[in-house]
Length: 151
Image (tube, rainbow, N blue to C red):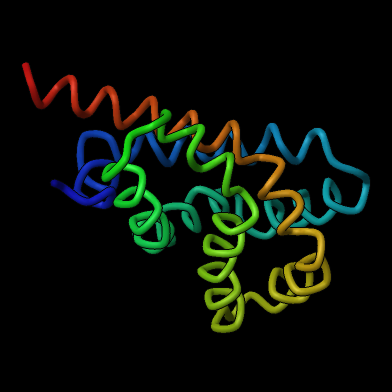
């Protein structure tokens, strides 16, 4: 069975997954409070393509963190992959945030780093709340990739 990185992290799907993840982040931020909106505006103001570049840089690591969940789901397939992730949203959120935590520790963008760690306590809640949209986005791309592979 191909890994999530092999299915979603390579051409031709990678740029589509990145674009959808950036759009999802933009949508999620619009629904948040002033502090998150302001921090996001500052980050985007630092560098216009900062968010897409970060998503691109972290995508393989995020998919790697999702891989054990994907394997467990694949073994049983008692629900959709999206439903499986949503049911475990807190654990999945923590797995995804472990990647961004490590990246934030290493970044040279001090303003972004400060803002990230200032808001990290609420990040798990925000990622958990975004899990239905994130998981359905990933599942949609998985289905399209699997459909293309069988054609």
